[in-house]
Image (cartoon, rainbow, N blue to C red; front, side):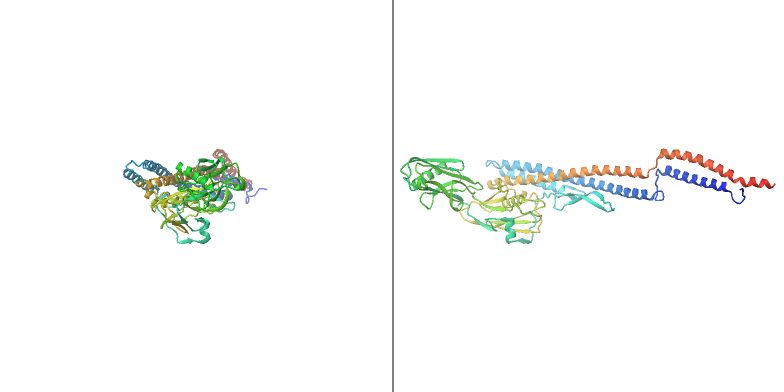
Length: 522
């Protein structure tokens, strides 16, 4: 049915033209913006995902800048630590030269002082953008990543850079005292917080020569005593009693002139006391007898060792001439833990830094004592080969007795990694000897610092490379979601332009239909 009021053909043609124009506008927008999803109206789900990813890209670009800054800062610190290591190695060379007595130690000391000042200059200048990682103990966090959970929560993750304090600061002793069993659980001397040391007396082994109940000693009987690797053997002529054998052995030991070893008469008949006055050196001792008649226990035994009596053994170890400050094998050291040793009336302190161990504490206390030692006091750090326990041996080379006492605290400020460098003094024999041992600790501290920075620098570099690749991947993913396919859009544009022309022509033809009806009434 034809109608002049309703032109269905025109309406269909008009809707077709509108649809073609809409598609054409969308295609032209894709071509002009390069995006198939330019706004939330185009595809809300895809658009929202792309915007979240774009925000992550911006965040990771900021992280990349943070990593670059952190890597540069750590690189400066690493170079500083390596330079300090080289300078300390030069200091060691000077100290070694000072071990000779026929050198000008004053000039060597001047060279050491100059190197020390140069080390201080390097440590002070090792900053990047105001941040110095070789001063202080506070950790520094470098922003490394943004972690997005399944529910959309975002958290930041960091690479922690531990400062390596290479200053010579002595630190600050804490105000909270550690006492009683808490103290002895950390450190002890003679099993408690204090002990006495009579260094000249040393420790000893009491060897008992026994004739037994038989016929006594016979000709060609032999007694052997091994002291510190020296074997002393005496052969009897059959006239000796226990005291006579003791005197023969005593004479042979003393005639050998073994360093630090003396043999004397004991309080009982036939008793020989072998004493060790070597500082920081234990001495092995063993006894044996080859007798014709061993009835009634004839022979030789060690019946006393280092103050322990009632023994019956053929060998043992005479302790060193030194009092030991023993550190726990299980307790952990926390940053700010302070340790104090008082010896010969003078107190010496060391405050532990982050990540330090009992070995570090022992070496720190040694450095403190050696920096200004009381008369006749020398020290050595030792480790028990069986238990792994670290100890600080303190020798008092004086005929009188001195008391060593201990204390500890928490909440202090750590001593610097080069603590004691300022007090190296090679102008005396004792100072040169102490400096040689202590400079090894300082060199190891600087090596550890450089290694720590090098490790972190490698981690930051790896993370930086990862973030760069991650940003590229995110950009690629965003492009996959929202970028227009330009080849497809170009082909579609041409097709739609043709469709637009056809739709326009169709609408024009449809609009002429009422005119055709009007001709019927003419």
